[in-house]
Every structure is written in C-alpha cells, then in structure tokens.
Length: 226
Image (cartoon, rainbow, N blue to C red; front, side, top):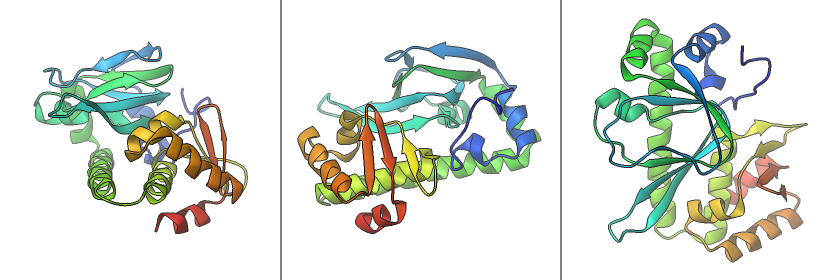
C-alpha cells in the first residue's frame, strides 16, 4: 500500500526489508498522523508501544543532569522508534517530538514481539537497526569530546546521509534537516554551522535550501569527515 507513494532510505528498517516482509510490518498496528512539534512519547513514561515512521521526521531529546534539553538524534521515514521500551518494558529513555508532519504506525509491544518471533529475518533487521543507533551514540560522544566543529559537522552529515538520506540524481543524497538541528546534533553554535556549510557549498560538496541539504559529492564529504 505504501510502497508506491513512499521512498525509504536504503539504510532504514523499511528500506532494508524485502518487499513482502515490509508489507507485513506495515500492516501491524494502526496509523496516526502528527503535526510538527507534537510529542509522541515523553522521557520516563511507562508505555510500551513502538512507532514505525512511514513519512516525516522526529527529534529525539533527553534531559541532562543540569536540566538542559539535549538533541540526541534525528529519526526519519522508515525508522522504528520506541522499540527499546517495547522490548524490555523499562521507562522511556528519551522524548520523541515530531520535527515535521508525519505518518506513523503504532504497534503494541506484544504485536511487535509476535512479529519478530514469527519472522526471524525481521528480528535480525530490527536488532541491526538498534545496534546502528548504539554505534551512532558512541560515535557522537567521542566526536563531541574534542573534535573541531568542521569535523563534527562533516561526520554528522555523512552519518545522516548514510542512515536517512534519499538518493537523488546521479550520486547525490538528499536530507531534510534544518541548520539549528544540525547545530544541536554537533554541539556547535548555529553561526559556526552556517560557516562550515558555506565552506562546503563553495567547494560544491553540498547545496542547501529551506530545511534541506543535498550532498552533491558524498565521496568528498567522507574525506572531510576523516
């Protein structure tokens, strides 16, 4: 039903599944629509459903010991979110807020468990997606501990292009991402992010628009991220 009107990044859960299994996963639960800034789940709440993002983006945020709200990640169409609480029953570890209009499937924890038990290939894909998130979180902690701003920006853009990018004409990759979100993800000020993006535009590595970044030369971006 969704395959003809939606494209999912190849690295996302939906993008990585075979068509038949993807269709089965998309049949689980029920569909909801959310407007930008709608909260899907709150940090610390004791709920156990997961969300399968069909379209749109969400922000993943957490509260620091000092009471500051930190942007932890951006998740996009094709991703499964809230799956940790659905699988282990522990309180939510983060707040999930819609960063755009979105469509999602709400899947109860017992339904998700049954699907994974009955479809080992999907269980492996979901486990791999969780592992990728954990690796990304580890990488972010290392990068934020001392890497210069231009390197952090390049690394986050490369990572988001790999995980959430939509292939465009030729070798280009498109991202729906605002500069304030990029600044928060990299622990960098918005003026510094703007300066780094300006350099990358001048080198024709990327192009920018409203809430949109197009990676024109992924290979050169990867070199900048090393």
